[in-house]
Length: 216
Image (cartoon, rainbow, N blue to C red; front, side):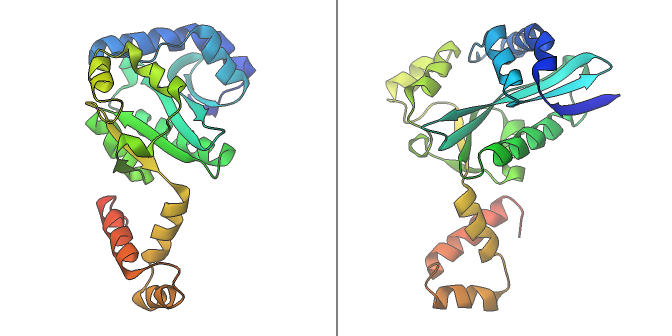
């Protein structure tokens, strides 16, 4: 029986397995990954800032949460699925679970992602992320140090962290709330404009963003 759970201290015994799966995934992609020790993964589990997927006592999926700049920014990191369980829709379920946990723990934080994977970009879009420049992401040096294990790190350095081969994506809870309002019937939009809560130009842009993520 497959269970998708918020991790706790009882799952610390899987920390080594998580690290092994992360390493194998990085080798397969050929890009690299931010290296994490079993101790670091165990701490995330103990803090209940991770999602684990268990099938009959076997760990088959994982993702964890990191926060930056005094919890203003949050990243969902380390998404892995055991090779035997790939192409089953499990990654999408983990993505949703870790996203929901992030929103619960950090309701005001911006959630961001950098990735080269089209599948991850699609999953992010389904959750409300939009593509952004790196300047809109955290400027915390500790986060960007995590890119040092990637073979494309020199490109990031050459561009002073402004761009790389990865695409930056961001979920901004405030903008998403405004976008949801902007998708209401036109009479409500006119009322918003009348109250000067949003400009017509801003509403048009929000509608455009919503169409990109297929919400209208």
